[in-house]
Every structure is written in structure tokens, then in C-alpha cells.
Image (cartoon, rainbow, N blue to C red; front, side, top):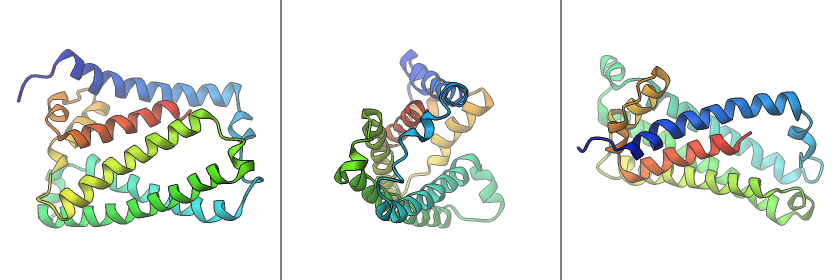
Length: 203
């Protein structure tokens, strides 16, 4: 494996810390100076039937996906080995649970995106940044679903805990292993990049 380049450090160290900074500072700014902006474009009053179905499905799926990421990325592989969980069993469970979460997220996105684009009163309140966030969210979901199903569920499998997880945990420990992320498959790199982009546009 080649040593990480300057661009690699900018992309896999600078971008994550920039995204975290914008996410935190942006929310603090919104809270202090634009409190009512969080609710001024609420679409609940414009249409409730689709929202009632789409929002819970999306949020349950999102929470499940986040929980899966916490278990898969933040818990070291050595811990599951210590528990006596074989790697194939862990991979199958992770892929199966991830697939269920992905189905829920995709279903929720379809309902909510359709509502936003097809209901005139809701579409009138939609801003360009809403569409940007939707595209990024779809990119995150797609690049998460593809390796989950086609690599880890029905394919040969890839242990992202030896690369992506080491890099991610290192970010919060002040010592990100850039070489680990550079060595990860491209689809995992795209998935991580799109996720940080969502952090940037979130506030």
C-alpha cells in the first residue's frame, strides 16, 4: 500500500473535521440567531397523510442504520472475537440487519420525496438545499446498500472493521489512520464522503 498523499490527508482528515465543525457551529448559530427558521418551513400543516406514514418509516430505518454503524464501527473487532462471535456470523447478522434498515430508509425516502415533489403546497416550501440534502441522502443509502447486500450478504464479504472502522475511531481519538481509509474499496470511500457532506448541509 502506498503512503497517503497530501490530498488523502486533506480528504480523510480535513474534510471530516470541517464537517464536524460546521455541524456543531451551524447548529449553535441556528439556535442563537435563527430559532424560528427551524420550524418556519414545516410542512406538517400542508399535508399530513403521507407524512404520517413516511416519517416514522424513515426515522425507524435511520435509527436502525445508525445503531448498526455504532456497533460495526465503534466496537473493535477484537471485542466480538473475545465474545466468541465468528467473523462469518457477525458479517451475516450485520448484512441482514443492514438490509432491513436500508429497506425502511428507502421506503421512507420514496414516500417523503414523492410527497415533497408531488404535493404542490409542500413543493412550494422546498428549497434548493432540501434537494441537495435529498440527493446526498440517496447517495449515502445506495453506497451503503450495495456493499451490504452484494458484498457482505451474497458476496465474498469485506471486513470494513479492519480499515474504515480504524480510520473513523481514530478521528475521535485525534489519530486517524488515513492509510486504512485509502486502502478501503472505493464504494466505502464514497459512502463516507457523502455522509460528511450531509453533516455540512444539515444546519
